Amino acid sequence: MSVIEPSSAFRAAPESAVPMKFGDALRHRLSLLRGTQPDDAHTPPLRYFFAELLSFSEPLTRPFRDAPVIKEATTPCVVILLPGFATGPNRMRYMANQLERAGHTVKRWGMGHNLGVKADIIDNLSARVCDVHERYGQKVVLIGWSMGGVFAREVAKVVPEHVDKVISMGSPFSHSPYSNNFWRPYQVVAGHSVEAPPIDADTRTKPPVETVAFWSPRDGVISRRAASGLPHERDRALALRCSHLMFPNDAECIEALARELEAPGT
Image 1 (cartoon, one colour):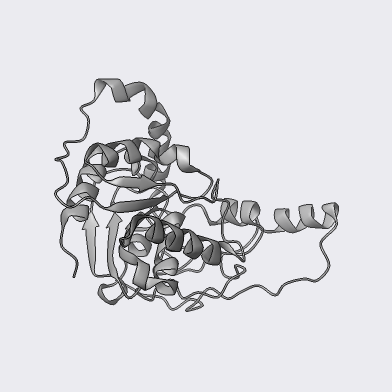
Image 2: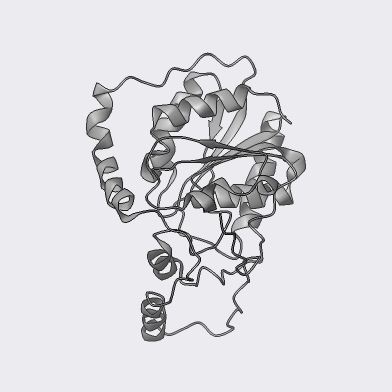
């Protein structure tokens, strides 16, 4: 497996003291549709990307599928769920309901919809973790889907004393910021290049807490190399069989999360 060395950290884009006019901002966003993916970036096959469309039928098929098999937790955890890019807490509601059914306390991330990296996102999330830790008197487990998992890892580096474990699900923390099939739309919505977000962060560095990476060979959005990481970038990696958009609703994923919440820390 080839390992590329992109900008080893997110490089913060220079801040402009003068806000862009609407026309200039629009042209800037459209310019972000352009760009060249590095030759050694790794992306999922397009057949998996188009297969992601099947996930939109999930609410219709859910009543005909068995619910995840989850035992009552012997050591209930306090969990914060961090949604993926372009989604919000409602997208994580089914997962939250299932984990609560096992006896865990599940909290929202408190940031509304995830619209990408913002200059204050990690500080605000760190404050949220501290508040939840103080309220419940125990360390928090951060479960993040896609970009939410990247944020969870960064928050755990800031307030590791308040975080018990980080579980990422299809999160692009490793390899290259171009190792996915969604970097152009992301740039347009977020307003910055994937190489130059408004924060400095080395996403490949492992947080000083137990870190588990869920990934799937059927993921049509995020490369398996980006989501599974290298051994020194996480404690463990677990392969599942769901598409990227199904991580929050997939029975196998939710059952694996329930087991992780019961597993003793490293």
